[in-house]
Amino acid sequence: MNTTYSLHHINNAQAFGFSADAYSRFKFGDDAVAKSFGTHLADGFINAHLAAGLVKQQLVVISSPYSFIPTATFAMKTWFVYRLNRWLAQHGYPVVQETKVHRTITYKEDYGELDAEQRMSLIGNDSFHIDKDFLQNKTLVFLDDIKITGSHERMIMKMVDAYGLSNDIFMLYFAELTNKTIHPNIENHLNYHQVKSIFDLDGIIKNGSFCINTRIVKYILNYDFDSFCIFIQDQSYDFINLLYDMALGNGYHTIEAYAQNLNFIKENLFLNNHKLIQHGN
Image 1: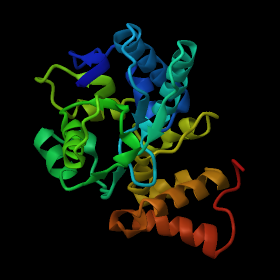
Image 2: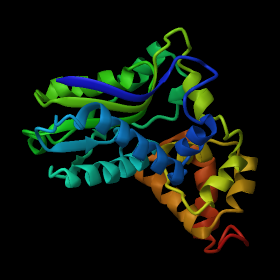
Image 3: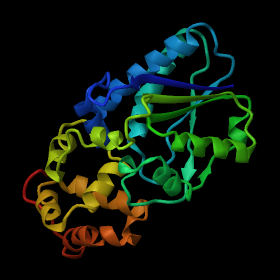
Image 4: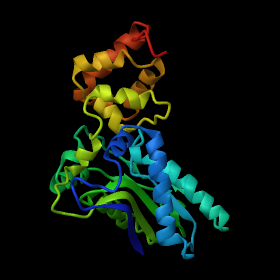
């Protein structure tokens, strides 16, 4: 059994059924929005598929694939699991388990601006890996924030076929583009609805509810050098260390487009052994 469930269906390029500004903040690490999205998605999933007593096996929740730095979906997944576990425990079911889909390739291209063919061409070079033995006799719940062209889902199902998985599967999305006359780059319209420049990140990073993800790391490292220097010198020592360590973990130090900004952090933060900034610490 393969079942897709989406909380919101995008039929209109101007009206989404959720706040575009909130979605934009979520994509750049606002954990308060991730909590709201994950909680509402769990409630919708429970009402649509679990409340009728359809829980036959233990559920395994699997966030969107990542290498070292989690995606924005990972933060939403955490709150999804919290709400789902409360319902499962209350009704006498086993709480969920979690596992990870590992991916092998990282790229600097902005996925949200690509059309369906470009997306499949880019992601098709990747390979996904999962622990097959751990999944035996369990129902799989693959979680992602948005379904636009379905290329990510096709890659997941390619992995499922490659591993010979026979599990029941749910593909869950916070939102899905159901009007196929709308160009897939509507995703970038949502991603950057509130984040128009690197300086718009300041309020997200410093709001007391921040969760780092791949998008914000790539965005900062790929930004023009002069603006990056101004921005980074107003960030806390802890954030700069986190940014640098996340970048190394994903191998971004090997990507030429990120080299100048990363080297600025390295040379100023470590080699000279002093803080880049005077405020925010």
